[in-house]
Image (tube, rainbow, N blue to C red; front, side):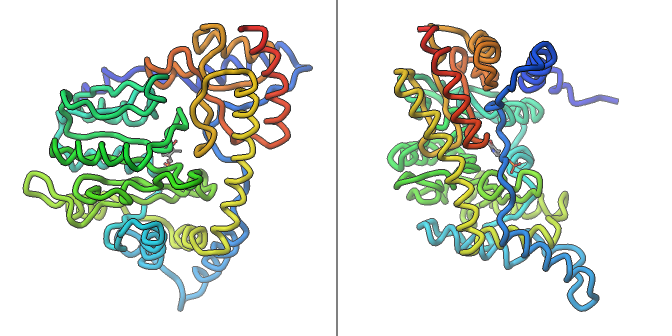
Amino acid sequence: MKVNKNYVNLQESYLFAAIGKKVREYAAANPDKTVIRMGIGDVTRPLAPAVISAMQKAVAEMGVAETFRGYSDDYGYDFLRGTISDYYNKKGAEISAAEVFVSDGAKCDVANILDIFASGSTVLVPNPVYPVYVDTNIMAGNKIIYAPGNEENNFLPMPDENVQADIIYICSPNNPTGAVYSAEQLKKWVDYAIDQNAVILCDSAYEAFVRGDLPTSIFQIEGAKKCAIEFGSLSKTAGFTGTRCAYTIVPAELERDGMNLNKMWSRRQSTKYNWLPYIIQRGAEAAFLPEGFAQGKANIDYYMKNAETISTALSELGIWFSGGKNAPYVWLKCPGGLKSWEFFDILLEKANVVGTPGAGFGSQGEGFFRLSAFASNENTILAMERVKPVIESLR
Ligand SMILES: *Cc1c(COP(=O)(O)O)cnc(C)c1O
């Protein structure tokens, strides 16, 4: 027998394990110190009350013969697909319910979508990047090339005419850099993808954090339905990281190589997947309806207060950073030319604050550092009070 030898090419995923180990060791040696965690990429605010009551109602329905539900409708219940389609139409992206596929995570959809593309495809991935894009393509035996982000392009790499790709990953607002593409920049990617006959895989897990008039969906860009698939998630939008609900939008008109990608994804999902529990789909629907949406937005505003606390402190210190305005991440340049892990150790020891070393997101992340806005307001203020003198002493 033979195994998938592509797995040999995977790097050990040690980033969060290494952080956890360092923090545990520090805490054990310094029991009098309170460590503030700003490295996490997980939400902390509870689910909206409207979401909870919708799920409670659905639980009660499941206990009554007349309203009991078994297997979900294919691709998710119409009530949820319709609500998501309305959400997109309201923001000027014409998406029909038939183009929306409900699932239990953007992470798995981003990985599973590779089933409909040929193994050996050339894949353009930004660097630094959410590690899932890289690892899933290694597993699939694809060829990965990188679009480098840096201080000069504000960590928003643009297409290079000399580079050929079959699949292009875009994550906007970005994890880890918090950077957001403008409509003009996204249009350049759309034009490039059409020109190259490539498909853009657009991860918009943080779209709900966008303020002002930056795009929140690639489908707000003309031509995107000819070249893009978008992944949305309620994880960060509505606090569903533990509850689970996401969706993938595959335009009905998207075709490549004589095949319709919407039909291929329909076939792939109905063959290998059985959709989300009714109870969760009702909770997700409530998150998009006015009451639940307003409650979810209040949680996002809460996190964005933290992003502002962090950004203000860094601006006062004259530290270069991206993000913090339309994303729950602030991506900063380590002071004094320090490397990511050196700055991590100093911040842990001198400020008792935990962040995420940028080098863990790719080679272009070396010398940078991610702070997340998911801690409490009080702890974020306290953390930045501790961080300020430490950064001052390093410059
Ligand atoms: C958190 C996150 C997601 C959400 O994934 P789920 O599986 O839906 O929880 C997707 N993409 C990025 C870049 C993320 O940071």
